[in-house]
Image (cartoon, rainbow, N blue to C red; front, top):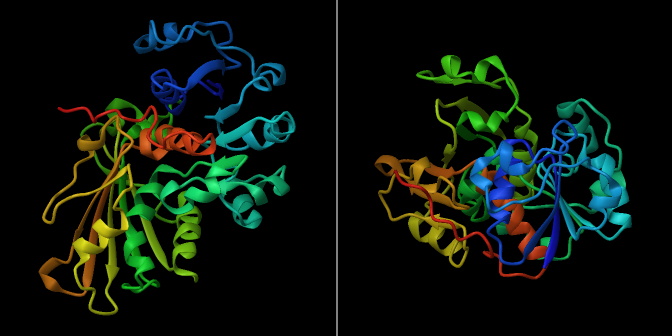
Length: 343
Protein backbone atom coordinates (compact mmCIF):
# COMPACT_ATOMS: atom_id res chain seq x y z
CA UNK A 1 0.00 0.00 0.00
CA UNK A 2 1.17 3.54 -0.79
CA UNK A 3 1.30 5.70 2.33
CA UNK A 4 -0.18 9.07 1.43
CA UNK A 5 -0.03 12.42 3.18
CA UNK A 6 -2.00 15.54 2.27
CA UNK A 7 -0.85 18.99 3.30
CA UNK A 8 -3.78 21.40 3.35
CA UNK A 9 -6.73 19.04 3.68
CA UNK A 10 -9.47 21.59 4.38
CA UNK A 11 -9.85 23.23 0.95
CA UNK A 12 -11.92 22.01 -1.96
CA UNK A 13 -9.01 20.25 -3.68
CA UNK A 14 -8.00 18.74 -0.34
CA UNK A 15 -11.40 17.20 0.33
CA UNK A 16 -11.58 16.03 -3.29
CA UNK A 17 -8.25 14.24 -2.81
CA UNK A 18 -9.69 12.63 0.32
CA UNK A 19 -12.86 11.52 -1.47
CA UNK A 20 -10.93 9.90 -4.30
CA UNK A 21 -8.05 8.45 -2.27
CA UNK A 22 -10.46 6.87 0.23
CA UNK A 23 -11.72 4.73 -2.68
CA UNK A 24 -8.26 3.90 -4.04
CA UNK A 25 -7.39 0.19 -3.70
CA UNK A 26 -3.63 0.80 -3.30
CA UNK A 27 -3.60 3.74 -0.86
CA UNK A 28 -3.31 4.07 2.91
CA UNK A 29 -4.20 7.59 4.04
CA UNK A 30 -1.55 8.36 6.64
CA UNK A 31 -1.61 12.08 7.39
CA UNK A 32 -3.91 15.02 6.65
CA UNK A 33 -2.63 18.34 7.88
CA UNK A 34 -4.20 21.65 8.79
CA UNK A 35 -2.67 24.11 11.22
CA UNK A 36 -6.01 25.81 11.89
CA UNK A 37 -8.04 22.61 12.39
CA UNK A 38 -5.47 20.36 14.06
CA UNK A 39 -7.19 17.72 16.19
CA UNK A 40 -10.58 17.95 14.44
CA UNK A 41 -11.80 14.67 12.93
CA UNK A 42 -11.88 14.95 9.15
CA UNK A 43 -15.41 13.54 9.02
CA UNK A 44 -16.65 16.30 11.33
CA UNK A 45 -15.71 18.93 8.75
CA UNK A 46 -16.63 16.78 5.75
CA UNK A 47 -19.52 14.44 6.71
CA UNK A 48 -19.50 12.84 3.25
CA UNK A 49 -16.33 11.05 4.45
CA UNK A 50 -17.93 9.50 7.58
CA UNK A 51 -17.02 5.84 7.77
CA UNK A 52 -14.42 6.24 5.00
CA UNK A 53 -11.76 8.53 6.51
CA UNK A 54 -11.13 8.08 10.22
CA UNK A 55 -8.15 10.41 10.58
CA UNK A 56 -8.06 13.78 12.33
CA UNK A 57 -6.30 16.85 10.97
CA UNK A 58 -2.79 17.24 12.34
CA UNK A 59 0.05 19.76 12.34
CA UNK A 60 2.25 19.45 9.23
CA UNK A 61 5.31 17.92 10.92
CA UNK A 62 8.27 16.58 8.96
CA UNK A 63 8.26 13.50 11.19
CA UNK A 64 4.73 12.54 10.12
CA UNK A 65 5.00 13.52 6.45
CA UNK A 66 8.48 11.99 6.17
CA UNK A 67 6.97 8.57 6.91
CA UNK A 68 4.81 8.77 3.77
CA UNK A 69 5.63 7.49 0.30
CA UNK A 70 4.07 10.50 -1.39
CA UNK A 71 2.78 13.85 -0.16
CA UNK A 72 0.17 15.94 -1.98
CA UNK A 73 0.25 19.69 -1.40
CA UNK A 74 -3.23 21.20 -1.69
CA UNK A 75 -1.95 24.53 -0.41
CA UNK A 76 -1.52 28.15 -1.50
CA UNK A 77 1.44 28.93 -3.72
CA UNK A 78 4.75 29.13 -1.88
CA UNK A 79 4.10 26.38 0.67
CA UNK A 80 5.20 23.28 -1.25
CA UNK A 81 8.55 24.64 -2.37
CA UNK A 82 9.55 25.36 1.24
CA UNK A 83 8.89 21.81 2.44
CA UNK A 84 9.75 19.76 -0.65
CA UNK A 85 13.58 19.66 -0.21
CA UNK A 86 13.33 18.00 3.22
CA UNK A 87 10.72 15.51 2.00
CA UNK A 88 12.83 14.53 -1.01
CA UNK A 89 15.81 14.03 1.31
CA UNK A 90 13.72 11.44 3.16
CA UNK A 91 12.77 9.66 -0.05
CA UNK A 92 9.22 11.04 -0.21
CA UNK A 93 7.75 11.92 -3.59
CA UNK A 94 5.84 15.20 -3.96
CA UNK A 95 2.82 16.18 -6.04
CA UNK A 96 2.01 19.89 -5.78
CA UNK A 97 -1.48 21.02 -6.77
CA UNK A 98 -0.36 24.65 -6.51
CA UNK A 99 1.87 26.55 -8.90
CA UNK A 100 5.28 26.10 -7.25
CA UNK A 101 6.55 23.56 -9.79
CA UNK A 102 4.56 24.40 -12.93
CA UNK A 103 6.50 27.25 -14.52
CA UNK A 104 10.06 26.54 -15.63
CA UNK A 105 10.94 30.21 -16.13
CA UNK A 106 11.88 31.68 -12.74
CA UNK A 107 11.25 35.23 -13.93
CA UNK A 108 7.73 34.28 -15.03
CA UNK A 109 7.04 32.61 -11.69
CA UNK A 110 8.21 35.64 -9.76
CA UNK A 111 6.23 38.00 -12.01
CA UNK A 112 2.91 36.18 -11.74
CA UNK A 113 3.13 34.89 -8.15
CA UNK A 114 4.99 37.79 -6.54
CA UNK A 115 7.62 35.75 -4.68
CA UNK A 116 11.09 34.32 -5.34
CA UNK A 117 11.38 30.57 -5.85
CA UNK A 118 13.07 28.96 -2.85
CA UNK A 119 14.36 25.79 -4.56
CA UNK A 120 15.13 26.45 -8.25
CA UNK A 121 17.28 23.32 -8.46
CA UNK A 122 14.23 21.19 -7.64
CA UNK A 123 12.06 23.19 -10.02
CA UNK A 124 14.50 22.26 -12.75
CA UNK A 125 13.94 18.53 -12.22
CA UNK A 126 10.19 18.76 -11.57
CA UNK A 127 7.90 17.30 -14.23
CA UNK A 128 4.77 19.05 -15.45
CA UNK A 129 2.04 16.55 -14.70
CA UNK A 130 -0.13 16.48 -17.80
CA UNK A 131 -0.09 12.72 -18.47
CA UNK A 132 -1.32 12.97 -22.05
CA UNK A 133 1.86 14.95 -22.82
CA UNK A 134 4.48 13.85 -20.27
CA UNK A 135 3.49 10.30 -19.34
CA UNK A 136 6.95 8.71 -19.54
CA UNK A 137 8.69 11.53 -17.66
CA UNK A 138 6.04 11.34 -14.93
CA UNK A 139 6.79 7.65 -14.33
CA UNK A 140 10.32 8.43 -13.12
CA UNK A 141 9.66 11.79 -11.46
CA UNK A 142 10.24 12.69 -7.82
CA UNK A 143 8.35 16.00 -8.03
CA UNK A 144 5.22 16.79 -10.04
CA UNK A 145 3.79 20.21 -10.76
CA UNK A 146 0.13 19.30 -11.18
CA UNK A 147 -1.46 21.39 -13.96
CA UNK A 148 -4.03 24.07 -13.27
CA UNK A 149 -7.66 23.56 -14.26
CA UNK A 150 -7.88 26.05 -17.13
CA UNK A 151 -4.50 24.90 -18.52
CA UNK A 152 -5.67 21.28 -18.57
CA UNK A 153 -8.83 22.02 -20.54
CA UNK A 154 -7.09 24.38 -22.98
CA UNK A 155 -4.01 22.26 -23.67
CA UNK A 156 -5.94 19.04 -24.23
CA UNK A 157 -8.34 20.86 -26.51
CA UNK A 158 -5.67 22.42 -28.74
CA UNK A 159 -3.00 19.72 -28.74
CA UNK A 160 -4.12 17.72 -31.82
CA UNK A 161 -4.30 20.87 -33.98
CA UNK A 162 -0.95 22.21 -32.82
CA UNK A 163 0.94 18.95 -33.18
CA UNK A 164 -0.47 18.53 -36.69
CA UNK A 165 0.60 22.09 -37.60
CA UNK A 166 -2.86 23.02 -38.86
CA UNK A 167 -3.55 26.40 -37.24
CA UNK A 168 -2.02 29.86 -36.98
CA UNK A 169 -0.08 29.71 -33.71
CA UNK A 170 0.13 33.50 -33.42
CA UNK A 171 -3.59 34.09 -32.95
CA UNK A 172 -5.06 31.43 -30.65
CA UNK A 173 -8.09 32.25 -28.52
CA UNK A 174 -9.23 30.48 -25.34
CA UNK A 175 -12.60 31.64 -24.02
CA UNK A 176 -13.00 29.69 -20.76
CA UNK A 177 -15.57 29.55 -17.97
CA UNK A 178 -15.30 28.08 -14.47
CA UNK A 179 -17.55 27.33 -11.53
CA UNK A 180 -16.93 29.21 -8.29
CA UNK A 181 -15.10 26.33 -6.57
CA UNK A 182 -12.13 27.23 -8.75
CA UNK A 183 -11.58 30.24 -6.50
CA UNK A 184 -11.06 28.01 -3.46
CA UNK A 185 -12.86 27.69 -0.15
CA UNK A 186 -11.82 31.02 1.34
CA UNK A 187 -14.54 33.61 1.86
CA UNK A 188 -14.47 36.37 -0.76
CA UNK A 189 -17.21 38.78 -1.76
CA UNK A 190 -17.21 37.91 -5.48
CA UNK A 191 -17.97 34.24 -4.75
CA UNK A 192 -20.82 34.84 -2.30
CA UNK A 193 -24.09 33.33 -3.51
CA UNK A 194 -25.80 36.71 -3.81
CA UNK A 195 -22.86 38.05 -5.83
CA UNK A 196 -22.19 35.12 -8.18
CA UNK A 197 -25.68 33.63 -8.48
CA UNK A 198 -27.78 34.53 -11.53
CA UNK A 199 -24.85 36.41 -13.01
CA UNK A 200 -21.97 35.87 -15.44
CA UNK A 201 -18.81 37.88 -15.83
CA UNK A 202 -15.27 37.83 -17.15
CA UNK A 203 -12.24 38.38 -14.93
CA UNK A 204 -8.47 38.48 -15.35
CA UNK A 205 -8.84 39.88 -18.86
CA UNK A 206 -5.66 41.96 -18.60
CA UNK A 207 -3.72 38.91 -17.40
CA UNK A 208 -4.38 35.72 -15.45
CA UNK A 209 -1.87 33.52 -13.60
CA UNK A 210 -2.74 30.54 -15.77
CA UNK A 211 -1.75 32.37 -18.96
CA UNK A 212 2.03 31.68 -18.71
CA UNK A 213 1.34 28.06 -17.79
CA UNK A 214 -0.92 27.53 -20.80
CA UNK A 215 1.54 29.31 -23.08
CA UNK A 216 4.45 27.21 -21.77
CA UNK A 217 2.54 24.02 -22.59
CA UNK A 218 1.44 25.17 -26.04
CA UNK A 219 4.98 26.32 -26.84
CA UNK A 220 6.18 22.81 -26.07
CA UNK A 221 3.68 21.36 -28.53
CA UNK A 222 4.75 23.68 -31.36
CA UNK A 223 8.46 24.00 -30.68
CA UNK A 224 8.11 27.79 -30.88
CA UNK A 225 6.22 30.67 -29.30
CA UNK A 226 2.46 30.89 -29.55
CA UNK A 227 0.28 33.99 -29.33
CA UNK A 228 -2.69 33.33 -27.04
CA UNK A 229 -5.61 35.46 -25.93
CA UNK A 230 -6.99 33.84 -22.76
CA UNK A 231 -10.13 35.22 -21.12
CA UNK A 232 -11.58 33.40 -18.08
CA UNK A 233 -15.14 33.85 -16.83
CA UNK A 234 -17.00 33.01 -13.62
CA UNK A 235 -20.12 30.88 -13.94
CA UNK A 236 -22.89 30.71 -11.30
CA UNK A 237 -22.30 27.02 -10.57
CA UNK A 238 -20.07 25.07 -8.19
CA UNK A 239 -18.02 22.76 -10.43
CA UNK A 240 -16.93 22.58 -14.02
CA UNK A 241 -14.88 24.26 -16.72
CA UNK A 242 -16.00 24.86 -20.29
CA UNK A 243 -13.29 26.08 -22.67
CA UNK A 244 -14.26 27.25 -26.15
CA UNK A 245 -11.09 27.38 -28.23
CA UNK A 246 -10.54 29.08 -31.60
CA UNK A 247 -7.82 28.63 -34.20
CA UNK A 248 -7.47 29.79 -37.81
CA UNK A 249 -6.58 27.07 -40.29
CA UNK A 250 -3.43 27.56 -42.31
CA UNK A 251 -4.03 24.64 -44.67
CA UNK A 252 -6.68 22.11 -45.57
CA UNK A 253 -7.01 19.98 -42.41
CA UNK A 254 -8.63 16.84 -43.74
CA UNK A 255 -10.89 14.99 -41.29
CA UNK A 256 -10.67 16.88 -37.99
CA UNK A 257 -12.88 14.37 -36.18
CA UNK A 258 -10.52 11.55 -37.18
CA UNK A 259 -7.50 13.62 -36.11
CA UNK A 260 -8.89 14.03 -32.59
CA UNK A 261 -10.01 10.43 -32.31
CA UNK A 262 -6.60 9.16 -33.41
CA UNK A 263 -4.70 11.55 -31.12
CA UNK A 264 -6.59 10.40 -28.05
CA UNK A 265 -7.13 6.76 -28.96
CA UNK A 266 -6.33 4.72 -25.87
CA UNK A 267 -6.25 7.72 -23.54
CA UNK A 268 -8.24 6.64 -20.47
CA UNK A 269 -9.41 10.12 -19.48
CA UNK A 270 -9.98 11.98 -22.74
CA UNK A 271 -13.27 11.34 -24.51
CA UNK A 272 -13.56 12.64 -28.07
CA UNK A 273 -17.29 12.87 -28.61
CA UNK A 274 -19.08 12.01 -31.87
CA UNK A 275 -19.26 14.68 -34.57
CA UNK A 276 -21.94 17.25 -33.81
CA UNK A 277 -21.83 16.72 -30.03
CA UNK A 278 -21.99 19.54 -27.49
CA UNK A 279 -20.16 18.46 -24.31
CA UNK A 280 -21.67 19.71 -21.07
CA UNK A 281 -19.93 20.37 -17.77
CA UNK A 282 -22.43 18.15 -15.97
CA UNK A 283 -21.27 15.20 -18.10
CA UNK A 284 -17.91 15.26 -16.28
CA UNK A 285 -19.02 16.30 -12.77
CA UNK A 286 -17.14 14.17 -10.25
CA UNK A 287 -15.20 12.26 -12.94
CA UNK A 288 -11.57 12.47 -14.05
CA UNK A 289 -12.58 13.01 -17.66
CA UNK A 290 -12.02 15.64 -20.33
CA UNK A 291 -14.71 15.57 -23.02
CA UNK A 292 -13.93 17.23 -26.33
CA UNK A 293 -15.82 18.09 -29.51
CA UNK A 294 -14.35 19.70 -32.64
CA UNK A 295 -16.13 21.87 -35.23
CA UNK A 296 -15.36 23.69 -38.47
CA UNK A 297 -18.33 26.06 -38.70
CA UNK A 298 -19.70 26.52 -42.22
CA UNK A 299 -16.58 24.80 -43.56
CA UNK A 300 -14.65 28.03 -43.09
CA UNK A 301 -11.09 28.70 -41.98
CA UNK A 302 -11.83 28.66 -38.23
CA UNK A 303 -11.73 25.57 -36.01
CA UNK A 304 -13.75 25.62 -32.79
CA UNK A 305 -12.95 23.12 -30.04
CA UNK A 306 -15.18 22.56 -27.01
CA UNK A 307 -13.38 21.12 -23.97
CA UNK A 308 -15.04 20.37 -20.61
CA UNK A 309 -13.63 19.08 -17.32
CA UNK A 310 -14.51 19.05 -13.63
CA UNK A 311 -12.07 21.66 -12.28
CA UNK A 312 -11.70 19.75 -8.99
CA UNK A 313 -11.06 16.34 -10.58
CA UNK A 314 -9.31 16.29 -13.97
CA UNK A 315 -8.42 19.91 -13.22
CA UNK A 316 -6.88 19.13 -9.82
CA UNK A 317 -7.25 16.12 -7.49
CA UNK A 318 -8.09 13.42 -10.03
CA UNK A 319 -5.21 14.37 -12.29
CA UNK A 320 -2.90 14.41 -9.24
CA UNK A 321 -3.91 10.83 -8.46
CA UNK A 322 -3.46 9.89 -12.12
CA UNK A 323 0.11 11.19 -11.74
CA UNK A 324 0.60 9.23 -8.52
CA UNK A 325 -0.50 6.04 -10.24
CA UNK A 326 2.11 6.56 -12.95
CA UNK A 327 4.86 7.40 -10.44
CA UNK A 328 4.27 4.18 -8.50
CA UNK A 329 3.80 1.84 -11.45
CA UNK A 330 0.07 1.30 -10.91
CA UNK A 331 -2.63 1.12 -13.53
CA UNK A 332 -3.17 4.73 -14.59
CA UNK A 333 -6.89 4.56 -13.90
CA UNK A 334 -6.59 2.94 -10.44
CA UNK A 335 -9.08 4.55 -8.07
CA UNK A 336 -10.39 6.84 -10.81
CA UNK A 337 -13.30 4.89 -12.24
CA UNK A 338 -15.98 7.24 -10.94
CA UNK A 339 -18.81 7.92 -13.37
CA UNK A 340 -19.97 11.52 -13.67
CA UNK A 341 -23.05 12.54 -11.69
CA UNK A 342 -26.31 13.11 -13.53
CA UNK A 343 -28.56 15.02 -13.18
